[in-house]
Image (tube, rainbow, N blue to C red):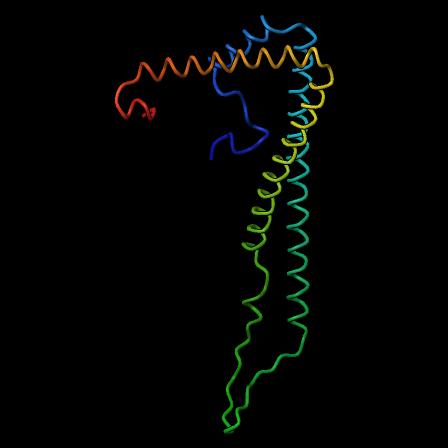
Length: 182
């Protein structure tokens, strides 16, 4: 499991790309554009963090509810009068084994429930937070049309530089293993 699996831990792609992006930020944008981008980035981070925390809490709450339901169902099953023998039409009688200890909630089941619901809530909440943060950041950038045009132009130039760099790296590699990055 890599750090990119959790939305809250995702970082930039690499040091070279980060330096190239910083260079474009300095030369292609005005101070107001940089501030707008920093505000948008902080919105994404805040939404992902809040979503992750809420998702983790929701997962723990659902695991608690599941555990309580399992315990109530077990207590109802244990308290209910159960048959101990089965009598067949030919007069034969068979003993029915007591399965009460087998359906009792266990610590291992509780650990599994809290773990899986916790991780599920963590991932789901983080991803939803990332989506809502991206939408909020996009809306904040799109408010000023002049700033949006400068940011889009800078982004296009940045993408072109990245593609040129990748093409140069592909030209330097030889053979199938080099093309596949092995």
